[in-house]
Length: 282
Image (tube, rainbow, N blue to C red):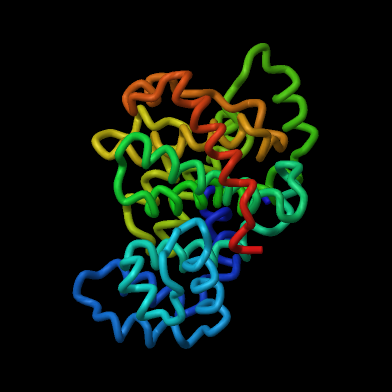
């Protein structure tokens, strides 16, 4: 593999796509003109998906006061945005659960990290008043989806990768190393994949800029929330693959969110508490 952008996108296209029912449901859930019965009918084509969505909807993560037993109830109780988040999260597990040899991540490690990042993004969103918090959860969950594609390329260039990491005199963002080796980084490619899957533009924008939220322009806030969540997740010891210790924190982004060191410590404690609860995807 030469690592050209076109080739990587071709490889990305070879990843299992979202099932037809999932892709259609995401589009309908993003549209204000779609009716609840129509959305429920589409989702019910995939009973395994429905079962996982309802399991998540009834978990402590959402804190629903009464049991949700149907898709229509989930739509009414949680709202469309939350259900869309659940559909994306459940569907993404297939991609993110695989081993990623280019990042020295065993099977399940990227998924564990992504799920923790989603939880962290929700906590940060609640702290800084970003709404909807479930949108932050999905952005946090998907922010490293580009690694699923780039892992294959990096695994083939492991010697060069080790040299670049080892020769760095000071921490260098792993996205910079990816750019040097492959002329694209996992954040940019992740944004392209989100566009390819027709996810909302805010989500693809946040994924694309999660390493450099200060460069995200007017739509910077969700990118900054994910950036802070990324740092929190690594702080509690999750996601430290080959690139974990190379993370470069954008202090300006945290300042714009109004987060100081004490806030991050409190959020880290809250994240540890949340991650100690049963995994609703387990």
